Image 1: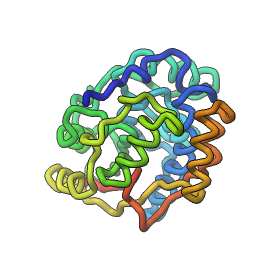
Image 2: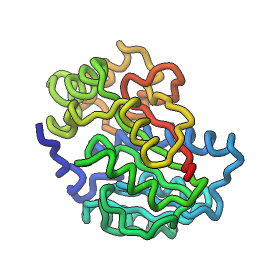
Image 3: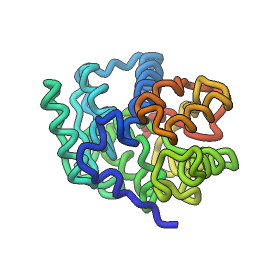
Length: 257
């Protein structure tokens, strides 16, 4: 199945509580918190660091890194998303540079960035290994690669495809937003890291802090129009798991060469 990325080209999508992308705002809180904590354990402060956001979309994560004192540049293939990101950053007094670009051909020279992150992207690209290679190329030696994506498991097929996209009683996302065959296992990702001089430190899961029945209830209420997308995401209470990486997962890796 071909992935339809047109959702990312719709104007006004990224910061509107009543649009599907608002669900990512809740995930953004959890993953930025994880990234900041993980870097802190290695004695790394974001202040003054040159940071690249690959697949920045409307700037959800870019703004978090900018508020933490990083010098952020974001790239994305969607001109509409870039314009939304620029507008929102300007409205919030944030100095973030946004450029057109894709993960497989990052438009920067070697060793330009202290930190690169790639979130909600690897499951959409045409070439995962090439995307990892490009991220590693523009990283300085000793720099950090932060990521999240979706594992290719029976659970992710049930949740991300069937519940979120296909079953009308629960679905909230476009039917072809994700293709299960394009999901990336941790083993595949780690092999790619090794090929390109990245040493993975850990994998963690990003999971709802609610019970399965509560999650189903939230999805049902969203499908019936009783909850906004943003409110559904917030009530999911996304948290970090060190034991469950069967769905959405992420982590951090260091460039060793």
